[in-house]
Amino acid sequence: MERERSKKAFEEAVQYIAGGVNSPVRALKAVGETPLFIDHAVDNKIYDIDGNAYTDYCLSWGVFLLGHAHPSVNQAVHEAVERGSSYGIPSLPETELAKLVRKCFPSMQRMRFVNSGTEATMSAIRLARGYTNRKYIVKFEGNYHGHADHLLVSAGSGVARLGNASSAGVPREFVSQTLVAPYNDTEAVKKIFEEYGQEIAAVILEPVAANMGVVLPDNKFLPFLREITSAYQSLLIFDEVITGFRLSSGGAQKWFGIEPDLTTLGKIVGGGFPAAVFGGRAEIMEMLAPNGPVYQAGTLSGNPVAMSAGIATLTQLMREGFYEELNGRVDAFDKELREVAKEKNMVLNRVGPMFTLFFTQGEVRNFSDVNRTDQQRFAAFFRYMLRHGVYVSPSQFESNFISIKHTKEDLERFVELVRGFND
Ligand SMILES: *Cc1c(COP(=O)(O)O)cnc(C)c1O
Image (tube, rainbow, N blue to C red; front, side, top):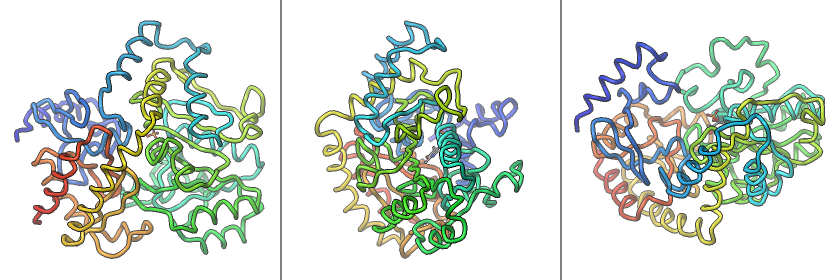
């Protein structure tokens, strides 16, 4: 498998683009590779500029639940573009997508569209602080909520690979109002609330962590957080940028039956375009400008092309039987893969169509467990899969994703490759 063109393209890119990439994990540094340059993508596959095809389990970090280049999404985008691609004035697709989102997420009585998950969480936090008139927020180790300053504390995803919990350029004062607890640790949260409870604006979390690899919440964790935040009149924010529309049409909140005060969605909701959304109870959301005192805005927010891609995507996944079909296939895959993982001294964490194979033994319930994994063995695994035409997410701190276009045969091949992996 030749990758000469990708290598050359990277050599050129680094002379113009910082690090040669526009988002750090894409550089494949952690797995000792240089990036693939993609020519095109269709359904379950990506094709690099050297002409190699890979079955894609990263799917632009979980965006493409329907697979790449879905015909109805593409058609909607073409039609939208013909009408002009931004107005800075309201248009009908914004309300149309909002209606679909609320149908899926009834807790999002009012919402606002933004351009990235980072903006969604950043705005939700500001709103929570404005609404409660309190300053502290609580987040969890290994949870990633985008790259806003005050959320870059013990963050997962690409930040996890920096070896430093935070980022340079973020003064300590900026993060001094962010309190951090280990994921799944109810005692630690209790202690934080005992000390700071009256001043905590919100608890933000990934209801299923996916940016330290997939880590599921213990049975009691989400109900506990719902209870303690209500007791202290703090807000509970579910960052469902990954889990929204992935675990179910109603995300993790429907899956676990827990209703947060505010929700952030991204990735799938934009159908492959830069769109994200935050929303929640009407009385909270009405605090936003122009009705209220909390400022938030965006030149391209509610962009009609992105809205149209979102509408087409949600229309597909709201079809009767969509998740049953997807999860049926994935459940069978889970059974096979779990057996093989055990033989290979790996741990499989999986919920719905998202999973991580951890190169460790014993349970993986929090960030310290993930940090005990064998990074070198994972890097070898990534390269092995790549050689065999399979692109898995290029870090132990990320989730893999399955789309509706991944066939039973694709999934069986994945299991067979894992079985054949000898490091
Ligand atoms: C990807 C992600 C974000 C950030 O979204 P961007 O669009 O990359 O800014 C926030 N939260 C979670 C849970 C994510 O997975």
